[in-house]
Image (cartoon, rainbow, N blue to C red; front, side, top):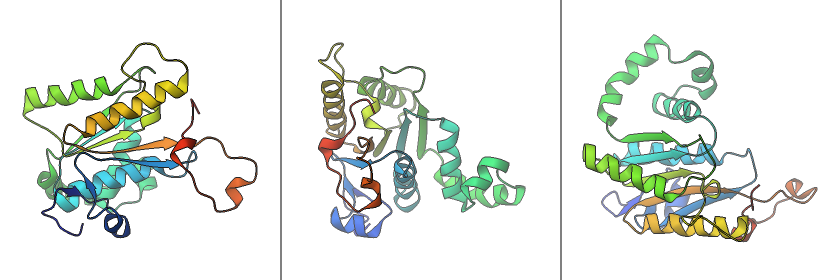
Length: 213
């Protein structure tokens, strides 16, 4: 990031840090919008890696889709420089483990991963309660919160007039979480494209976030 003393957290991408004035600021919510299976979750892991490795920022990464093990393996690949496929299929070699051990001590207490994948009605309240418990029990509070991903959350209320209202409320709640003093990265699935749309360049806008993709 352009100024490591600034109140911003590097994205790990120089051009994006430049656009954001050094990175994502605490109090801001950033969201990647893309179609399915094009790298949203991988990008979020890369943001977490950059925050931990380049700035020693504490990062809490919450997973609402897929397996926690997949996110762990992606972080492992990023920290060690090993191929993700190699780690997924064979794990770390003894040599790679030894090489990474001292570095891991340096980064200890910087990254927290938690999977919420048992049900479909999680909300920002579950994230907030986890952060509150981490602070109460361990005195640990993150600088960066990663939510993979936002439109899998529901709003804090019990009833909404359809999926659109539920997702609107969930994203407002994520912004409220950022307002507590965290930088928050998340992602959203775009609605399925029209036939042939993926064969030509085109823009995606926030209004195209999926309603229950």
